[in-house]
Image (cartoon, rainbow, N blue to C red; front, side, top):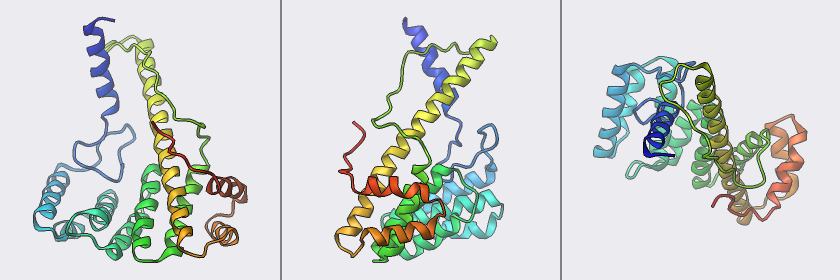
Length: 248
């Protein structure tokens, strides 16, 4: 394959996959076609507030936006961003406030990937607060979410053997680009879930190492979280596994 062909593929893949807003969005919310649903005013103020948080080591710039931007997607983005700030931003970390805002973010209809990320983040903050039972429930929520996907045993590799022609109006080329985008999105999501599952198992085992959590307690929590008992055996099996790092 010549250099021109390789460049064409790279450019097309960038166009195909870079559908998220340019700003540092956390919620993953987009329109039906993957387009940005946030106004330019919101993006401008949001980016400015994030910079001010870093500069002032204070979350107030983002808190002010909660009063200004009231649309559902704006509130979801801001609540999650505040949860992240209080969860991990240097000089602003406050686990209690992180739990509050991450819980607020969970009230909104978000992509599944975002929910899984929130369970990990909120679980970490709850664990820091020594609320081990509540943290454990969030980690189990994450494992429940992962259990509904038929994840491969190993690390899914991405096949590079695809040639896509950019700018072609041939229906076959258009369909081929769509098919490959679906393939990549699914592989990327599988990789994400495999990594998160590993971290959730690690987190549950960490709590078990310094707290009295036996199988009966884990099953009791699972019963509180879901009526789908078909998930429980596979989750318990995972928690008894060696939990080797699954990615290279």
